[in-house]
Image (cartoon, rainbow, N blue to C red; front, side, top):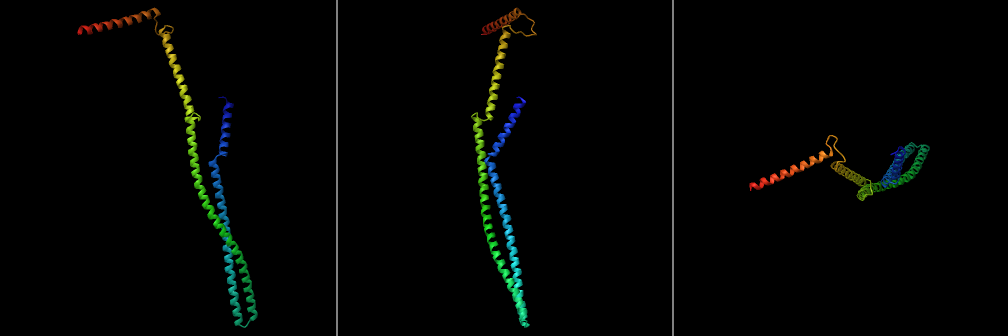
Amino acid sequence: MTLFKHAAEILEARVNTFLNHADDPAQTLDLSYEKMITTLQDTKRHLADVITERISLENQMTAAKHDADKAEADARMALQAQREDLARAALGEKQAAQQKIDSLQQAHDSVAAQAEKLTAYESKLQDRIEQFRTQKEVMKTQMAAASAEVGVSESLTGLGAGLADAGDAMRRAQDKTSQMQAKAEALEGMTEAGILSDPLDQRDSTEKALDKLRTSTGVDADLARLKAQMASAK
């Protein structure tokens, strides 16, 4: 493999990985879930701000109610002292406090309505996110199982790189074995025919033939002797 071919294969693998990730449904599901979580967190922050504003308005209303009660008490005290002018001034302060209370009450009612809507929205969103999370995990599990099944099927049918590579390796090994066996048989035949000789055997072809004949004759003689001995033993 040349250096340029190797570099091209690496680049192709990286591009394929990027494209697979870009079109990965499991990754898309995870990103959607993260966006929903971000939306929920934003909703919680807005709700916290609204509740804080509502509490602040309630505190201001309590203070204004205290001022109105104090002003009325001052007006009573002034009348008892026959100071109608002071009583009028105190009642003016009471009216100002009451106007402030009315204004604060309107703002409080509006903020309270917003808080109620946000609370309901947050609850629904949280339930929807939990449902989506469950569906997401189930879907990812099903996709993983389907992907594994496809991989096994591709390997078994020779479409994948798993058993296909193993099959190629097995065929190469079988071909190599057959070649080695054929070569061994050819060498053995050439040796028996005298075409090839053992470098340590200094005999010529005539001596080899005579030795082979002697061995064969000796075997035949031994065989005849054993047969005669067994026949006489009977």
